[in-house]
Image (cartoon, rainbow, N blue to C red):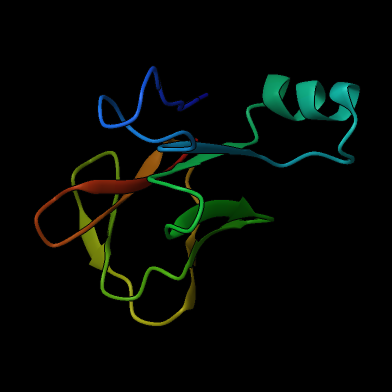
Length: 109
């Protein structure tokens, strides 16, 4: 399960806090609920709090606010994302969202 985080020590030195951001799907926002979601591997990582996200929802991968990005499968297959909320057939392996220059902007576990 992927987990992202920043390492910020002083202004101007490192990535800003929340860059990247880890998202956890959980039943509730209690500590136990978050830890359960984390233990179950229901995580996603984005480049930042306002960046596009790739989520597992039921039986599909859903790219949100990722119009123009590329969905990258573990086998290297690349599929363009067209639209603000796009679903793709789900596969259990981690998938990426990348920009045109192949910068990773989101990961779904």
